[in-house]
Length: 508
Image 1 (tube, rainbow, N blue to C red):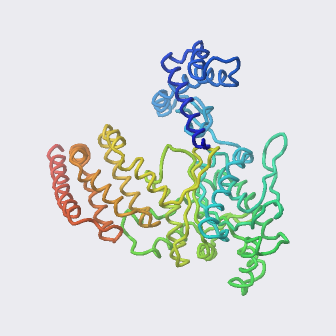
Image 2 (cartoon, rainbow, N blue to C red):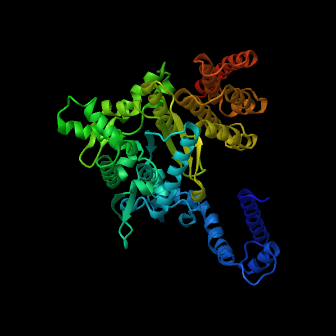
Image 3 (tube, rainbow, N blue to C red):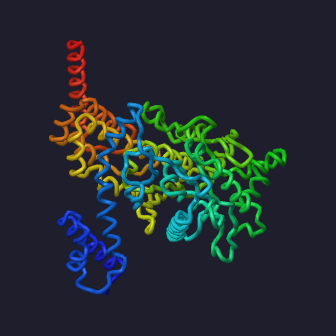
């Protein structure tokens, strides 16, 4: 019996074979008929495959080769000379039109977000999120929180915003000619087939600056949902809006209460950026979840609506997070992962830690993967952490490749350990064997240890220090042998740093 997976695997194999044959023939367009016949057999019609392969030969390959111009254009820009312009996006996500890279990229028209393609992806993400939550708990989540970044929405043309709309049960309305957004319309409950989900949005500072129009559109969507004349058990935004008016805001003047009960989009204060979590982690200035929650709320508790641009609403943000059941974040490409950027642990991890502290319960946390827009996937953050750990963090091929970069390779290893530690401190998603694996592969492996001693002893010292901090804070329980080896390595690395310092002073 053949499954859909079998069919997809066969299609992948046939596609690979086509391009391998083209590669052997130096991507000569004249070889396309031969390549098709060898792969699919002789036939009268191959559909659109000849045109696709011709595009790969005539356009895609030259554009990929031209990515070597990145260095040329960088040097030109630093010299104040012209750099060719091009659209922004992620080549690994199928956006071949942005190639070659290395150009002075421009963004998108904010009034065209979310695009119709992004709306399709956003609906799929919302469906996957709700289906998974329903399967795991037997019910729909009433309170969902999501972190939204500006650069990713530029690349995707608004996947995150489309997902928020889909969860709310509102449909974008585009101008038929310009394809710009004119507004949103409520999807009738009968058509929606489920309750409207209440969403708290934590935007980045860049998103705030780049997409002011979308802030107004989000406010329109939330307002429409909250004021719809619908049963509260089928409209969670309205249910919670009315509950706030009757409860925690009952003694507040009516106009102020209505505004605060409607806050759903939060971010940094005007003119400021970030989430503040990284400083806590790097300096070790935290003891418990309350420290993360305090920082996360203080940095991101400013409300944005059509009428308010950064109103101090930390009390309301705290109230929203205290009721959150599910925290979401999406990644739109495979060019990076959750352990090679501090933003993931700050925004996603920081939100999880804050919800855990304010609600008293660890929330569910789902990670949306839209690297292939046609097959959007939603994983538990713990599953994503394991995937990245196995595929990159302790992958010998990655370690071998990163060592070719000398000092910078050591820095990348240090960053990976730091971000794994920071994500575990906030989201609690790392297992003991993950720390053990990192300790063995990065600090105690003879080959990698020799590389760090020679190329970047500061990285070796930082890795050993961070792993021992994880042990001291109870994030993992190291084996006696591993613990002793790391302690010995820390002392040895400090000696190496002293030697480097003396050499530098003598040379000066």
